[in-house]
Length: 157
Image (cartoon, rainbow, N blue to C red; front, side):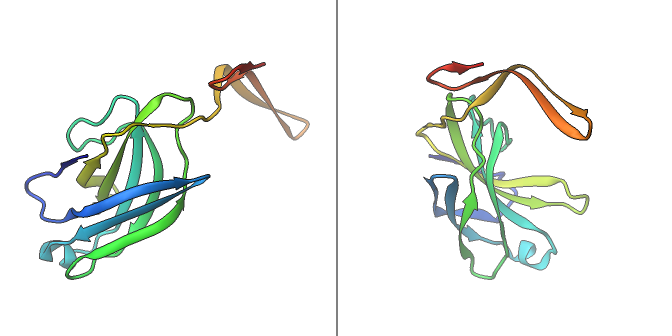
């Protein structure tokens, strides 16, 4: 696991953090240490779990956001933990996972304050659409058209 923190930010993930998948859910946990400046600021904070085939460069988020939980700043830091719905990426490729500590600026734009990248890749066996995918409304009923649905074992047409 590597941790990438922008040097000018004091609010960081603590040494204890992680995730655990259980079916359609993922349990997130992290010690978060807030700076005095961030305690005084009126900002929204979240922990986000991300999955990416190619990994993460610096503190840039890439790939698919798998789960997210809101956290509230507190003096002395917090242990944030929650069970969240997991929305893993489609397909069966190995994914690098990272836990991001994110705040939002006044315009609602995210800013990554810390990013912990985990060394062991994960595989998700999720069906994915292949080819053309469309949907038409016919007499008020949605009619999806999908060339194929693929999974790791076989192709279903």
